[in-house]
Length: 131
Image (cartoon, rainbow, N blue to C red):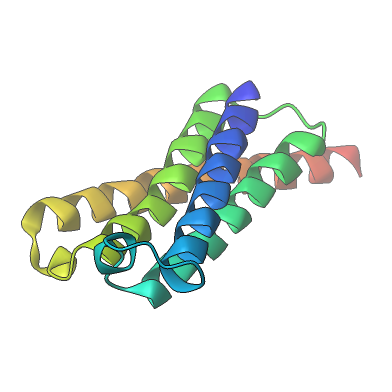
């Protein structure tokens, strides 16, 4: 279950870094930084997604219900890579047309979906068994 904490720490770190990047790109422009960040709205999506994924990881860990390690690893990896897709897309105008990013996106979604479904199923089974 510690994988959830590691994933949450990675997401919070990316959350803070993206906040600073967006701050410098918009409010304290440094020549080159605002040109480097091509799609500000997509970076905001990444920022929010990092926050949500960190909260999911911390919430699942905080329940205190024993969760399968593999499911936690899937959620930690998928929870970090999903927002990273938005982060990369914010810097690359042709992101969505590149095959390697389509494959990365699909794999990320599959891994995070497996983690979420497995963990929520485990929680559901725990609740049903304690009734």
